[in-house]
Amino acid sequence: MPRNNMPRNWEPPAPAWQSVWEQQADPLIAGYFGIQADEPALLDAWAQEAFTARHGPFAVELGRHDCREGGADHLYIAYWRRSHYERWWAHAREWWSDGRRLNEGVGYWREIITMPFERFETLHSTTEQHGIGASADGMDGPILEHGYPGGMRDRIPLSEFHDLRAAGNFDTRLESRNVDSGKRVLVRPPENMCVIRSGQNWSYCTGEEKAYYLEKLHPVLLEGMRYLRDNPAESNCYSLRFVDKKDNHWGPTEQSFGLGYSIDVHAFEEWAKSHATHIAIFRGFLKMVDTFGPENMKLRLWHEVTALPNEGCEFEYINCHPQTGLLRYA
Image 1 (tube, one colour):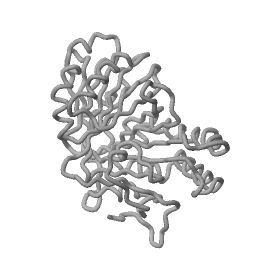
Image 2 (cartoon, rainbow, N blue to C red):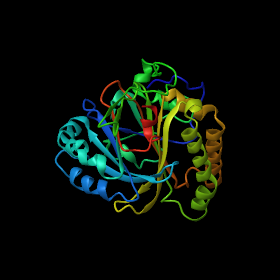
Image 3 (cartoon, one colour):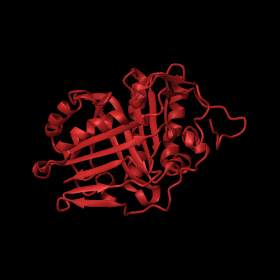
């Protein structure tokens, strides 16, 4: 494993574990399917049929994101192997391409990312696996490559041979295509754009630990997410959605995650290393560890990170508000 930025004589602050897969020839696919509406019923009807069809995803989650512009995104998060996704999408795409989607009075969006194993990493604070890690063959760890600036990049195998930097500076105009009189927009994400899904699970916490997290750490986390969302040119972050995870009936859970897209992995790395909002998050977490002890803490943290390849990613927006995801850069 490369260690591009690991300080000499460095020791990690706490154990961490990384999901592993045996079959690496068939990349992973993450699909985010959203509806901008008061209720998700129209998307639900499609998802209930599509996700149970042949070659459907091996894992599905639900979430809700409150938009800064008002309203909400209800979204499905689904995972495949690429070979299964391609066969599934050959049939599922009919619903998305149907002209009726343009006139239903709601917005739809889908963001599909290919996750080649050499461009991908996932990390967990405990041996319980979240997100795409739930499909892994097992766990490696504890691992050393975490807890220091550059650790996330070091865990991406390709970083041993490639700097994973964006081809240019932050660009407010991405390659895109308008169809159906502009009601449907397809945006091409740039190569090496970094996608991170970073989750928090406080459902195991009780009493003082739960109160501590919700009252002292979660608000600081939200402040950091708002900074990334509201300052794209400064942070080099194209989009940041903070999502409340829902159960299978859209009920509340005690989990959340940030879904962020930045110009490259270095942008998130720089924010984590030097920006006041992330320093506050990190210090708050270390204080929580010190208060409750690393052996006793029940809070689960995890993330999955991909430096996108040049091909195999699809971002489509139908009647969405103009600040949605990458649509603002179309």
